[in-house]
Amino acid sequence: MTAAILFIGIILFLGQVFSSLFEKTRLPDVLPLMILGMILGPVTGLVRPEMFGDAGQIFTTLALIVVLFQSGMEFKILSLRGAIGPGFLLTTVAFGLIMLVISWLSHILLRIPQIYALIIGSIIASNSTAVITPLLAKLNISAKSKTILFLEANITGGYSIVIALALLGVAVKGGDFSAQKVGAEILLSFGLGLLLSVVAGLFWMRILNRVRGLENAVSLTFAFVLLVYSISEYAGGDGAIATLVFGVVVGNMRLIKRLWLKKLNFQTLTFNEGEKGFFEEVEFIFKTLFFVFMGISMRVGEIHLVLLGLFLVLVKFLVRMPCVNWCTGPSTDRNDCAVMLAMCPNGLVSAVLAAMIAQELGEQGRVIPDVIYSVIFFGVILSSLMSFRIEKGGLQWIGSRFFARHREPAAPAPAQPSAAAGETPDGQNQGL
Image (cartoon, rainbow, N blue to C red; front, side):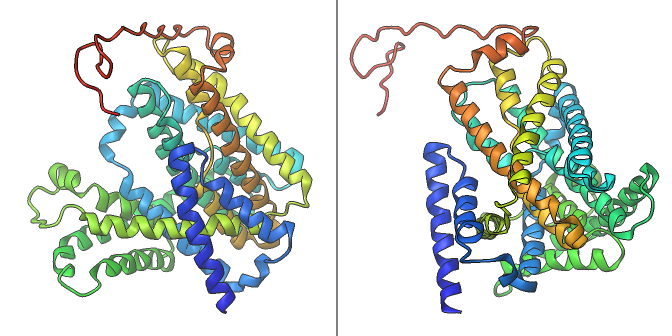
């Protein structure tokens, strides 16, 4: 027991170190955490997934709840206005094509049922905002292109959650697979989850001001999130979707009241900084522990699955290329197009979905997390390397060869000699 507590403490400490290095080097903290797990698990055999027992399944579900609620809170409905046009077109076309191609290849190469292959495709087709945001920080692209990438990551995450969980529902119930069944499952899960989570969100924001007067009030909000998930599951809906929508409701209550609930008296329209900080810390803890758990769970010895993950990442880039080329206008310069091509790594949502789906499907679905974990690992590496090369002025051949219909990047303005050391051309002092 003491060794386990020490192990968790060291992992959380290293997670903070890796996160700090991420901000300076843009090396995603996902990679060292996964590598640490791989060393502890499949490489040395010190830790095995079986050691966690039922605790591993509970941990995976809790991680999913936290990640979905936090993702919902961070999603702003107003941002959808910017998705109209190229952003929404790129998001939907790229997600649909990548999902179909990855599913087809997975079905052929893994010889798995079609519905399992579609689950893999729906997860791989999404992108990770948490990985993309820091990578974009040092890249010189237009604000419009950054907005498109942020929106794409958020919306594809929603697509992935809804479709993957609907497909999972059909797979668990068994029977013949059909588009009608998947559509009915989506409507049932999303409908019940939407209804419950909207009512729950309005109720909680209505009483939150009173709750804040109680001791340990922040933890009560977390407890209520767990209740929303559980009640939705018992009611026949999908707890994951309910949790996601609940987060969207509480994160956008100010807009919801202004547009639709003007007559209702809400004293609290948003979480305060302490409450937001609490959920950010909880998400960080689960993220750190989960990526190490993910590394432990990887079957590195199954080299064909590892290589298949790398192959599917390359296919994702290949399919994404014409989507970026034809779903963005010619006014978007080639450098921005190259960045849009590079920014498509998978992240925590994909990892948690894969683990949860594997638990539901048992040994039959064991191949799904193996492939997804490999895709996350190689996708983050390739996106990081490509962003680094683009930042240094490399990979210009990608823009000229594959995005020729777009305008060439503007030449950087020549440096103007300053009148005195320590001054900018306009005469203002420049800090160190």
